[in-house]
Amino acid sequence: MGWIWEQIDSIKSLNFRQLVTQAVSLGMIVTSALIIWKGLMCITGSESPVVVVLSGSMEPGFKRGDILFLHMSKDPIRAGEIVVFNVDGREIPIVHRVIKVHERQDTGEVDVLTKGDNNFGDDRLLYAHGQLWLQRHHIMGRSCWLEPIFGDMTFIIFRKS
Image (cartoon, rainbow, N blue to C red):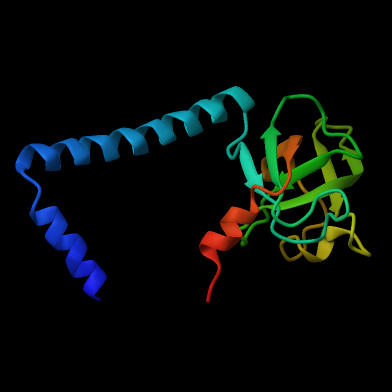
């Protein structure tokens, strides 16, 4: 508790000009991060251009903590591609491989079935109740680049003690 009071006292000791300078600097950092994120969204076409692999379901290819960079093009999704998808009712995106593609003849829309490389069965148990396939709107992006290890920082930062 003493550390908090020390921080409050140090802020109180700043004159008005220093306080405004600190606030503007913080605002510029936050704004820059948001601009970079939105720029990546526009360039990649993905609602989340960067994700961290959270489980071991894709080992040995992707390990827990790896960072994936995503893109989303209008090209049809093919079997073998790594996709990141959201399931209705779940907040955390899932990184898995497409194992089957089903194209509807009447509409031309593509439905996909996914599976983690390290899992025994497909992902139908992960999908919403009664859902057998993923549609295009579930797919957040396709893996285009892997950056190993750096995602471990998120586990360190957000680890529950």
